[in-house]
Length: 210
Image 1: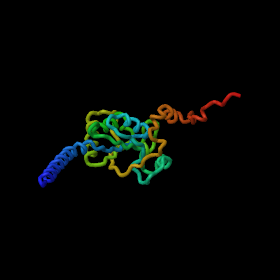
Image 2 (image 1 turned 120 degrees about the vertical axis):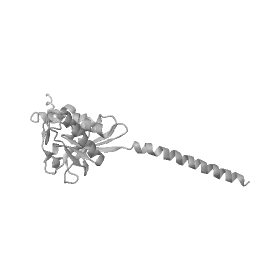
Image 3 (image 1 turned 45 degrees about the horizontal axis):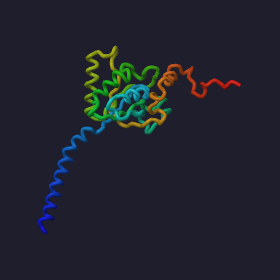
Image 4 (image 1 turned 45 degrees about the vertical axis):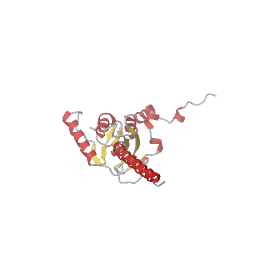
């Protein structure tokens, strides 16, 4: 009558040890798949966000503002160029699928022109300047190394003027800015390239015939 409880206790202890070992073995795998974050500014955040939304391994790309001194600024305030913020994109990604170096490659070769200062395409002003906001020493080292490689390769016709600055804060932009390029790909181009011809959809409709 006494051996049975002891056997159960012994079996329970063994089972507990096995479960603990399984958990410990799985822990490194979970740590390796933990998401990471990168923040880039490269002109209008609509286009930069749209590019990173199509990169394999990117969990999310969010339009917002970084690099300035005003907390939680509005789009109208940032657009004045007086807050110090740049239109930015926060990229949350899985490092086991896409590396930070690969994100840098996409940013420099696809998402913006690193040879123009305080402008991208038709957009001009300090709020459109290009910046890599590094979050730790590893991102700083990777960015410097990649820029050095591009410079040595003479990858661009002019010198790279994209800034490399420490990350301080990211403020999510208003809801209507999120996924804007995906929702309005051609309308946005019309509005920016031909502002004198652009009207809202409701104004563009011809009047009804009597």
